[in-house]
Image (cartoon, rainbow, N blue to C red):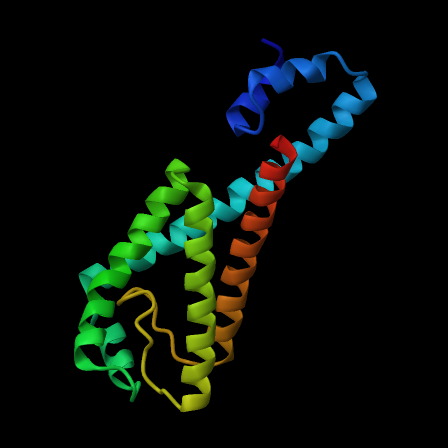
Length: 179
């Protein structure tokens, strides 16, 4: 097996049949196509591992101590007590589950869609909390990181949302190319 085939296999970007089609093309096309693919694959892997790490750390931290999240959700006037309890209970489990699904590549299209929805919700909630005057720790990362509602939180959520959009775009473009 040639070196570039090993790299393709490690990146999981193409199966052997497509790799063999690369062998039959000219070297310049092969190098250009491989360079483009490897950049996209590396960017996809980087984005997904960052997102998975954020979700895993956040979920585990909230399992350890969810008081910050509980206090934040109590400040939202339209949430019932039962909905708050369900959210505080399920959100860490959902985050950990999405992190595991992302790392194991389990149902990637559904996982990426769920992550996008969650990051859009987090972004909107950070703006709501900022303009709503929430002045407590949001509980986003449990007791690990003290994070109050403000421009820093909004910027952080924009970055996380952007990473998930980039990962989703690369993944869906990759799916269309494969047919």
